[in-house]
Image (tube, rainbow, N blue to C red; front, side, top):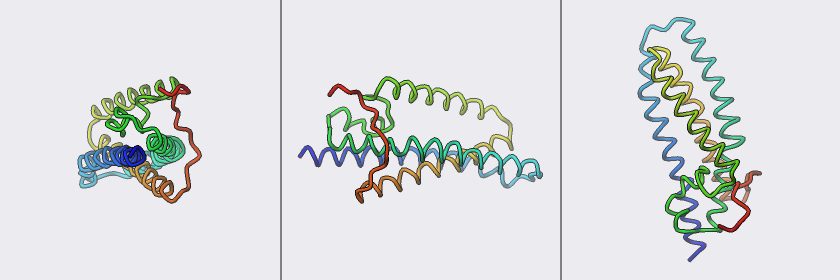
Length: 173
């Protein structure tokens, strides 16, 4: 029974995170795609391509694919073998590293959350078309990141585990 609960928790954790990311992608893209109906100049297209390339690399590849996504899968694997009621209930937050993590992981997770929240507030203050161009660039990075989690989850189910640590405390708490 513990193994079944752990497996369900791991699926809930990864699936819940994917759901949050898909929601964000959908929400941002529907608000941002309207910018493409504007009469954009070459400088707008240059900014869009530059920002999209930057976000694909920094957010999608470096942030998600190389760091966050493998850790999500490692934490889901940990959850599947160490199911506890709170972790199971809040599995998406557990897999994202918001609790039962090393001090360093907690610090990085909460600082990144604060930084992202601040950037979202700043971008919302930008006038169109700039807000939409940045939004579309963010969609590129989030889409890459979401697909990265999906691919790594499928690979994990096939027995190929990512080379990442779950960043859980050493004590069995």
